[in-house]
Amino acid sequence: MHRQVEQTEQVESFRLYGEDTGSPFLFVSDHAGRKIPSFLADLGVSEAVRATHIGWDIGIDGVGQVLAKKLSALLIEQQYSRLVIDCNRAPGHPTSIVSVSDGVVIPANQNISPEERTWREQAILFPYHDRITQELDKRQHQGRDTLLVALHSFTPIMDGFARPWHVGVLHNRDARFGAIMFRLLQAEGFTVGDNEPYRLTDFSDYTVPFHAEKRSLPYLEIEIRQDLISSVQGQEEWAERLSRLLPHAWQEFQTIYG
Image (cartoon, rainbow, N blue to C red; front, side, top):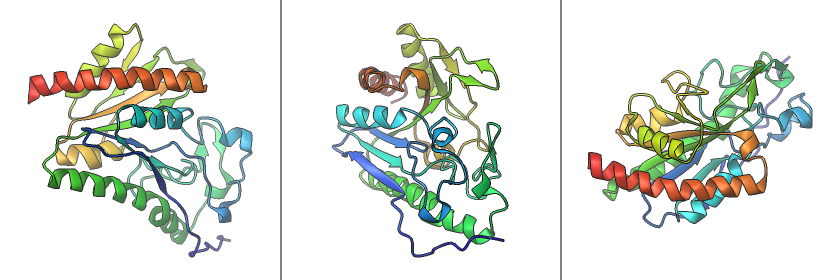
């Protein structure tokens, strides 16, 4: 029997941090939130489990918020748990609403109705991406250069494998800016993954292909290992590091590619 979705429930799909002061950087964070709509209660999953990597990108909220402030740029941050709907998946994608995540069964996501899927898309997924589109449209109208920076974090261990990378730089069709950041992060002494621990593709991702590559915009999708940013200190350290490296990488990108 399907749940009755409360169509009048108001949700805040995203929040804005920082402000647009003319910076070329636009930060987005697909998995920064942990909220759950009231009609889904706890999704049938304990708070302890929802607080792990299956529920959100641990630590990336703190990194993004500090980073936006340091670079006087705008951050569009998605507020809901990826277990409600994954905002880095296209509408209707088979893993946009997972029934099992890293071996954990998600009871509230079993056999959901088309109406409930539509509600989650219209209440959470679409408003978030509409706000990104609105921001990019504004910048395009103003004739501004823009770099889209998608912020993510990854669990240190997956399927029993200890991941050796401190940070990953992901790319699909356009690896230009990612290659510059890859080199700069390596120079800082980090083990950097090139399309590791995940590979960015049209199927596996939505935000970068839809917003950046369709517009031929340069972009960076970055993954930071969660044990490095689980504390406030770690978040501030990585925000400081990225606030130093991103302008340098952007200047180099502009010099090379115009």
